[in-house]
Length: 334
Ligand SMILES: NC(=O)c1ccc[n+]([C@@H]2O[C@H](COP(=O)([O-])OP(=O)(O)OC[C@H]3O[C@@H](n4cnc5c(N)ncnc54)[C@H](OP(=O)(O)O)[C@@H]3O)[C@@H](O)[C@H]2O)c1
Image 1 (cartoon, rainbow, N blue to C red):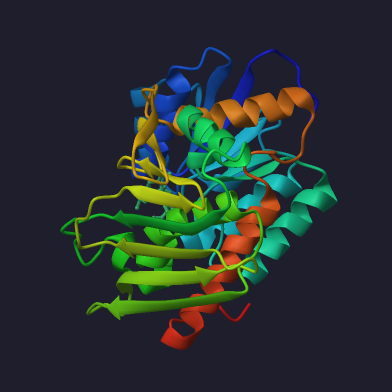
Image 2 (spheres, rainbow, N blue to C red):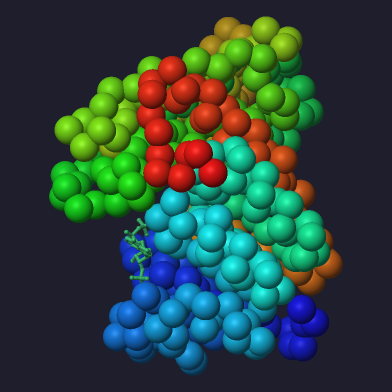
């Protein structure tokens, strides 16, 4: 789609929790135009548009996809609908920012990427960490050899909420469970650090009454011997920090490691060498929106900071570790 103004005209698909957060994120970005929102019901779309200041409200997702004025679409539906929603928008020529986990399984991610390339449109998984300024600095520490060779990554993304039985997080038919909802963060962070697929990937999970994985752990091993030790949960609070251990020192990222504001570099004698502090601006979803708009201005079809091959690798890891669990999502057999 040709860009006709300096502002990007955004459309949002869905009116749930994170869609509202993304609308708030757009509100603080002068280069973003809050153009349209779509819901499965016109009433919800109207209410969302009024609340956040969108110009148009649609009662079907298709109507938003078919609006020729929409340039970029943010998809905030449950995991099982991401592929269908993203394909519909990309076939209509839209740039797409789709929530994590990008899809239910790697086969769906492959299909999503194939459509993006066929249509020559921009596609990115809405994964915040790679766009956080402090994370970029931590990566510079690693890449410039400040901790030597990276050997161990250890991280936790656990939340404790009293979800109702109706919550999408606990519903298998909506792609619920801790792996896709929160486990994706440390796994994606590991892929960003190690920049290669693991040779070995194992996982364990504990299932709740609704047959979704409510907590779990993943162990990854890379070709050079580096390992990752990752935990994730929906009903257990934890200190959600991370450690990156190298041959010459280590980095501690304060919680929440995925949206950090403080990181400390230690030498191999556990002495502090440097502390980085940088506050998050907005609610951090603005970093993703800024990345999309920068990529569109540059004519890029994918983000160099959150490339599609990483999203695919993460889905393949999640497929591998859940296979022995017997965890099967509704559209697993596509
Ligand atoms: N980046 C982050 O920090 C973050 C945080 C939370 C969640 N997420 C991701 O965002 C996505 C949505 O999560 P959420 O917490 O916002 O979920 P949510 O509050 O349940 O909202 C999901 C929305 O999807 C739409 N939807 C379409 N079909 C649906 C169906 N059959 N059942 C329920 N909703 C349906 C609904 O909007 P309409 O009724 O308007 O159509 C609903 O409001 C997930 O992929 C999740 O992993 C990301």
